[in-house]
Image (cartoon, rainbow, N blue to C red; front, top):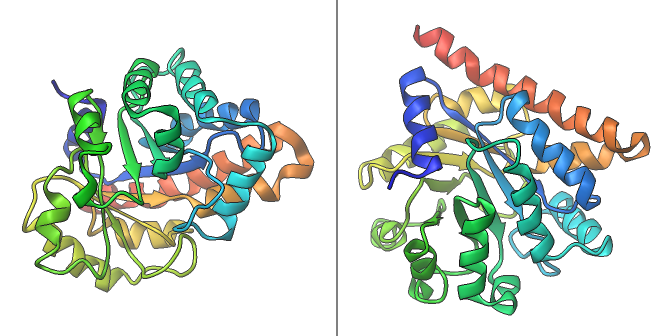
Length: 275
C-alpha cells in the first residue's frame, strides 16, 4: 500500500521542487495552541509535518526544542494527547503526512504494540525515534513497519560507508540527513558538504533524502533544496512560537505561518529556476 509520505514525494517530484518538512512540538505551549499551529502549517506551505513527542531528556535537541518540550510537559501534555492532536488534525486534513519524532522512552512506557495501533488509528504516517539504532530494530522499527507506519532513520556526517547500509536497511518513507555534527539548531549547514553527502546516500537508496538541523532561513533552505529532496525546518519554528508568546495563540500561529511562507517561497524559486 502506498503511504501518504510516498504519495507526497511522488507529487513533489512531478512538480519539480523539494519538500518543506516542518517540525513543531506537540503541546507547545499548550495542546490547543499546538493544534492550531499544526493546522496552519499546510496552508502556509508545509508539505510534511514532524510532530515532536515531548520528553524530559531530549539528548539530540538544542535549547529551543528542549524548552518547547519542557513547556509541553509543564502544561500536562502526554503521548496520549499527542496522538489525540494528530486525530483532531486529521478531521480537516486527510492528505498531509504526519511523522512523530522523539525518543523511545515515552513509547516504551505507553506500550509498543498499543502505541503502533493507536498511532496508525490516529492518522500518523511515520516515526523518527532518534535513540533507537538499527541494532534495536526489534524494539519498535519492525513492529511499526508491520503496523503500516514508515520508520525514518537518521544518517549523519559520521555515517561511513560501512555503517550506511545498516542505517538504510529498514528505513522507509525518506532518509533524514543530519547536516551538522551536534544538536538541533546549533549551527548552519554547509550546502557544498550537504551536496556530497546527499549524493553518497542516494547512490545506495532510491528513497528521498531530506536534510535538517540548522536550516533557519529561506536562503539556507534554497541552497540545501537544490541538492536534496526535502528540507527540514524545526528549531526556527519552535523559536518563533516562543518569541510570540506575549501575543497569545493568534500571534504564535501567525509567527510560525509567516516563517513557513517565507521558507516555502525560497524553495519555490528552485522550481522556477528549473522551469
